[in-house]
Each structure stands twice: as C-alpha cells, then as structure tokens.
Length: 48
Image (tube, rainbow, N blue to C red):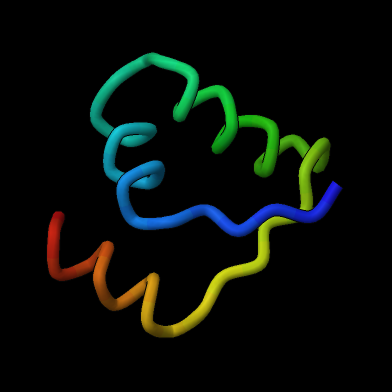
C-alpha cells in the first residue's frame, strides 16, 4: 500500500510509541510504501 506520511506523523512517530510509530515501522519493514516530498522532509528537519 502506498502512503504519504506528513510532518505530524513523522514527529509523533519519532518522539512517542503510538500508532504513528507503528506506521513508520511498517514503512521501514516494507509493509507500506512511503512517498514523500522535499517539502515534507524539509519541514520535518525544521521542526526537529
């Protein structure tokens, strides 16, 4: 399944162990196919 993870999900998934972290783990395990953009990654970098 293809997904687009937004900044809020990245931040929550990195900082806490909730559903957002499970989504990130699923992407890392290849269960989900994450599609992102330079804009989202720049925003994540700025926020963190």
